[in-house]
Image (tube, rainbow, N blue to C red; front, side, top):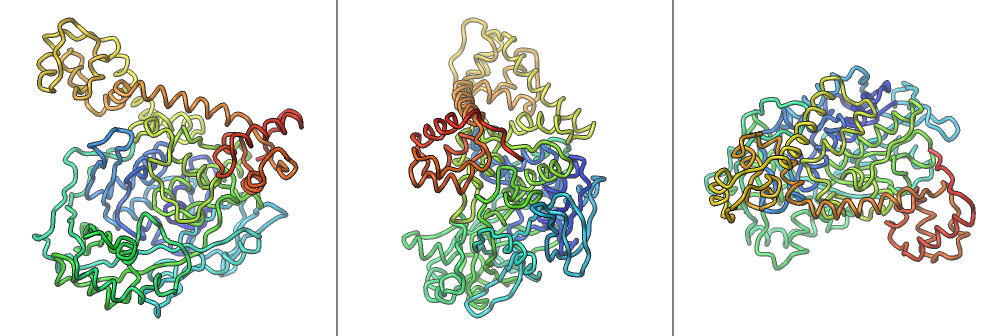
Length: 618
């Protein structure tokens, strides 16, 4: 199996393919940039942090690399319910990149080659390998293409400076883009951007709001707890009226607003030009100064993404409080690139028109390191399964955010760069970050993705958590053991002994403290899962009921190649959308915009009239 590209999608695809037992080649333009953080030096965030933990629970590298490169950690949304708690880490760019390479090189089935792929080798409707621009040929049964922003990428700084590139200082990919075009796939353009970087020595940090990380240590990975590097603060400042005036005066010199770029950008990560134009009544916007690493004072200016000319960018920076004397080390820029509508893929991320060809990452219209990693896992596992002639694997929406991500892409498609949020899932409480191992480990163990030590650690952790749950249900705590704790928590005292599990339902009482007072102490880390399960049992039961109903619909298969144009009971819109997406199940059909409950009923009737459902071809 060949992975094209060494970014966040490519590295996870290579790792999971290798763990599956497939001989895996990672082929990329520059071996030095494997695992490169192209934009901000951070991993995790809302929903994204949970994806990192899911990737890790399957054997991926992102969580392990983050733990080795983490220079600040924060658990976002602690003031809200556990369904939206989101781990996020600032990373040292260099440490992260090196950690990814180290993790991959520890996998015996991964090989590395530097080169640019020019075209695919096909044998009929199947992929047979790749050919590089320097004439080398590599045979393979499966190929995963993870091109990032390199497919016909163009960098814009102002309206006059246009540089062919997939990333600053790196050439775009043209030939493979043309080769993919020849397959007849629908191709479109998106844009994204990055802010300038500055010399932190030229910033008056004392005038800014310092933001330190959490004091409690945290590890994204379930399998190792390395010592974190030294921790560094971030800093918060804001835009000013002077900055607003500069943007307003020069907005037509921006690549986006000056007409140089036609592609649509990410709504949830707008440029400073977008913020000023789209939110004219906002008095100010946040700007975060984030350290790039331990061995440099360079800082990433999060919140000031721009494609204005370089001289205007410097004026913007110096219009921010505390940055009046800032020196810019690298200008921000916008980049426009090709992507392919993901409705042309099935839920394994396989291109329907070419067997053995998989797409993952920004080529599918997504944005974000974590979204790319999640797709890399799915594509890597399924490409390896295809190469090894094994059954494919599909992640359900009720199983993981990875499943939500992939299902959204292939069922709904994209009209703007896709970003994952907790609100995209119907099962937020089931898909918590603390339950990632419990949800994903059974799949990993069944597929043989763990080594012996990893399997032992995973099963040991799950058994310890279940033991806490059983202990809470079986242990009785007396009033003299509980009431002092309840009083400090502002809770009503008890008069008779009660089960620990009953008291743990109270919102201000910690399960670990209750067990300790009852004489059966367990550490906080081990009790976290059981505490949430006990406190939110009613809500969890409701979501599990919803998941069971979804599973019933997912169990109703729709044969591949179904001719919806002959289903006269369906609306015209439904026939068009179903023909385009080709859903694998009735559940997937139900999530296609424009398909109504009446249309679903019509599908069932038509398929029943045609005979028993056929097994869908892989």
